[in-house]
Image (tube, one colour):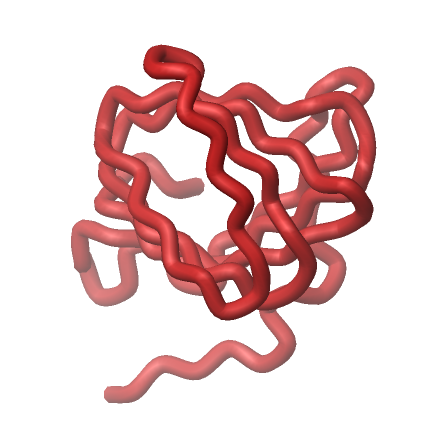
Length: 113
């Protein structure tokens, strides 16, 4: 059957990172046993979020701009509405935004709640 979630970007739960206004919620968490999760990530202008990827993920920027720093290489990427990103497993990324950004992600992970 085809799965559908309406307005999965609304009322996202906080990531509870001190000083950081970051919100995330899976729209699909391992649907029918699949080894991926997808959903929305929202970041407001606040302290940066530093996140280590323990899985491969791709992200589509729905709104706004993410400023991303690869904490190993120092590479800085400005990702804006319509851009698609890939984060390989093992990458540590610092997420920032000048205002607000919303992304849709799909990750190869099975530890979803």
